[in-house]
Length: 257
Image 1 (cartoon, rainbow, N blue to C red):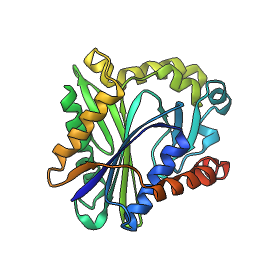
Image 2: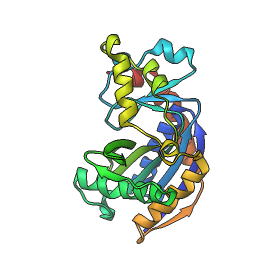
Image 3: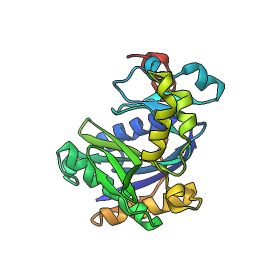
Image 4: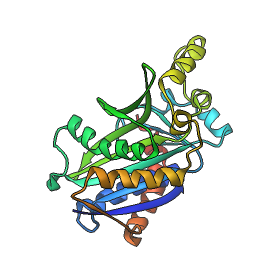
């Protein structure tokens, strides 16, 4: 199977989510090939899961003060701060039978591309159900990647974060915490349980280095496929710009829950 390999650089939150949807639509109608996309976020943003409440999860005033955007994903899961990371999205027709039909096993199969990419960098990670990748710090498991999935129009869309660095204090300054008295303890707990590539390796790993490694990782995980560098089509970009304006940049979507 031939995949397109797209790199779209660092974009605002609304465009990142809009491109994911526009590519899904194009793959569903067979106007574009199955696609692996790697990208970043600028400015920083918080994405919330499809079923979450924006007002309950995010401190919107704090986001405004720190120039942090927000957006609702089409996938489930919790709120995520996107800043110092590489993000991937992959669009696979279900009819291709490239990954198992089951949710858990498809997560496991697709995440193998990230695992092998991390291995290129010298990071040994493993899949932990339902959708996390962890590394071991001694006997302490630490999350280094989170993933989310949806299936629409016969296409599997899975996207996930690969942490280059992590700022737990900033994350908690932007999220609403049920009990402020416990915030310090919660921050300490997250610092123990979450890590990044740079922290784990003890050296700075940049966006481009991680991008090259993850592209290699997916090629290794799916040797029956080719991943050919391409550009997003003009029609996909037009559709994405429309979605960014009318959906992902609109309160009627982001605040619907």
